[in-house]
Image (cartoon, rainbow, N blue to C red; front, top):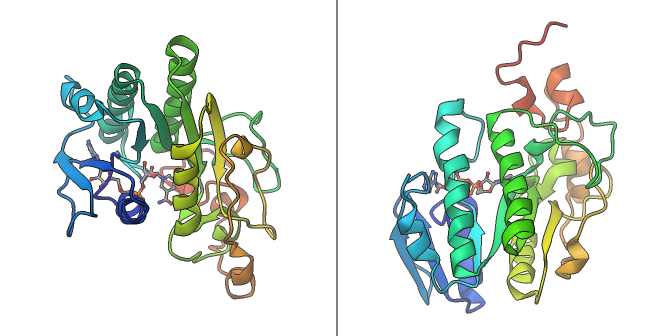
Length: 260
Ligand SMILES: NC(=O)c1ccc[n+]([C@@H]2O[C@H](COP(=O)([O-])OP(=O)(O)OC[C@H]3O[C@@H](n4cnc5c(N)ncnc54)[C@H](O)[C@@H]3O)[C@@H](O)[C@H]2O)c1
């Protein structure tokens, strides 16, 4: 698992450790706190031009849970190393180790779609920044390595994975920690997956922007729902039309300079 010292990495390491998976964890930052039972940890930089360290770490792994890298909108030069070179390193490592990849993609691959649209897997990419663009690249990397090398991928377009939804947008985008753990466990256990794409949200029915994906291939069905927070959060909006009209929300506003 890459990104093991990050917010989602720590949640996953603890939960998958409790499920007795053997975990090889890595990040560019030390793992905060004690390691889960049966887990090992090594520092590594995804952006390393050589890539041999990442390849060595992947040896003997059945699946790479790829959660490492730049996880928010940042300037192009900060994104390119961890998220573009890093993806190449991960997929080359997976190819050599004959490992499956679960890639933590993002709703920011489609962030400039409007909120009155309901998207499916045929909808076009509309990234809302360099971060979202790097996730588009990751999804296409998964397609390339499956077509050319048979490397399997579960490409998860994560919405907003936090302990609780905290604003109106998250009534559509929230993914609970339990549902994320469930999804990863399904992806680890599935016999064959090919190259599939899943909308990473909980069972949010009141507000739905995304439908129709490949979850059946791994038998995942989310259990949580943001619906129960609707009364509390429906009015928690920003009043900014660029933010509120687009699925990517605040990421669409960053460095926005389109003439009205
Ligand atoms: N949290 C969400 O709601 C959400 C939504 C969509 C997608 N995602 C994706 O899920 C993944 C995890 O998200 P998170 O919220 O835990 O982010 P996070 O920033 O907390 O964790 C990312 C980890 O990647 C590590 N990292 C950064 N650059 C690195 C490098 N060059 N080499 C090795 N490690 C490096 C960081 O040290 C960090 O621990 C990210 O890929 C993110 O884009 C998260």
